[in-house]
Image 1: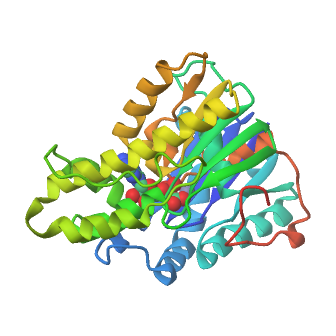
Image 2: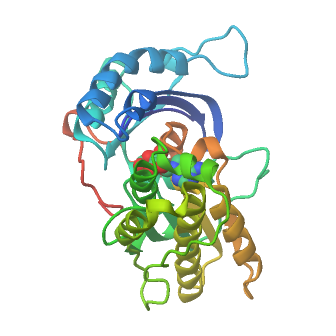
Length: 335
Ligand code: KG4
Ligand code: ZN
């Protein structure tokens, strides 16, 4: 089964074709990130305008399979369309949703709405050469860490998600983005912090690390960093911020994995591209008494893309009449 995925929730315009939810046929991403870099964050109105310019060329390119030179898929070969309906920026979401609805009606193909957060999770179901044919065992614990979300979710099966805890204020990626701006490191902040980090002596708190719950709080780190930034050196602060955020993420993920006796742990979202997080999580999971498989998506599937959306649509194949599909900027994981 071939699914065309469309993703426009933030500043990426993405389209992809995925076979049976696991094999990428094409995966195209246009980003307006460089446009936002000079403001140190996303300007929603500008992001939506860029989505409008990029959506049709991006979808057209997704019909060219990456492995077969000179060939082009025909829309008649697609079995369904999967589209991100939220959460995200409303102006950006509308571009993808309305385009997908039009294509679904024009081509007479089923339309499958996809929650963006669930889309991120499916980065772990796309089979890569690195992972071979390994796939997650249920129940699985998922840590979704992105620019807008930091959540721990119990995945009991495809389509069965239970929210366990999450941030009470800023998301992990948002914390990186805001701190990078304070340190003058540019946008997006996560990769900039990672690149600038050099170990030093400065210490930052590990918020809520010992609390008996599965919640996070990252906004205080920004304040702590702002107080220290005078004279303490950007690289050392960048390093310590990365250590603080990743320490808390690893500790709470392991607590949840033990509490719910899961068979697999899955990382998802843009912050899952962070090398320190990947390293620390791997070391911690290896030390667990119980056998738990850790899944970490390839870098390119951590940040926003449409291959994950097509995969999520395949495994949660519940088409909706196009005229009844609406964008929802505030959707949670269980909506
Ligand atoms: O998943 P994503 O592309 O978009 C959202 O759904 O939000 O995540 C973007 C976020 C940004 O906050 C960015 O700073 C962060 O992911 N990010 C990283 C890294 N790469 C992207 N954070 C830490 N380390 C990275 N290497
Ligand atoms: Zn995302």
